[in-house]
Amino acid sequence: MLIDTHLHLADSKYDLDREAVIERAAVAGVTTLVEIAESPETWEEAVRLADKYPFIYASLGIHPHHAHNAGPDRWPELANRLWELFKHPKVVAVGEFGLDYFRMQNTKEQQDYLFRQQLDFAQKLGKPIVIHCRDAHEDIQKTLKEYSPGPIYARHCPQPKGVIHCFSGTWEDAQTYLAQGFVLGIDGPVTYPNSQALKETVVRLPLERMVLETDSPYLPPQSTRGQRNEPSAIPIIADAIGWLKHKTTDEVARQTTLNAKALFRIN
Image: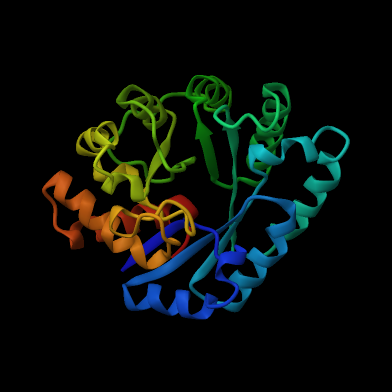
């Protein structure tokens, strides 16, 4: 059994064959999916998918690219909408949200405001968070420290505070996030020939502190580069991690599934 902890099934790239994509995932042994809705326009569809399929859960948030549409004038209204949607039992996390200094589609000030609002929101709900971080590790870590009262130095984290989606930082960044109570999301780039730093991090990272993601339809593994990604690619990521850590794919599947269930508080 495998879990894809981060994908975007509501994306229009799946409009012609969404059911077939879901079926291929099941055939590949990916039995649970976490749909990530990262803009207000996608929230209701994510909840609809979670309501329709017993093996799909939803996470709702606002990506930093949308920060210009979620400032102080709009956030209260959006927060009220979110609060109502989180009454659904299968809405399990807040996110993805965070900071993106690579594309800089919004100012740092706009992104910081939205980042902090969603951290506050998640704390009030008592929900785990899905963090987007691109070229912003220092500021992400500094802000998370304000919301994390103490370091957690443990190989196993029984109830993670959240996940750093598609981790791409240094080993030092990884250690900081682990100490703050997070697990790290490992995606298709772990299969790329030029992702040596990520591979070295995976070698050193306890298997108990990682979860598997596809970020579908983005970030396909090396074998399908340039094509649309699907949740059925999760076994390829598990294989790559197993090879790096000298573990069987079954061992990777078993532990990362336990990690994902602990992260999202699902059975």
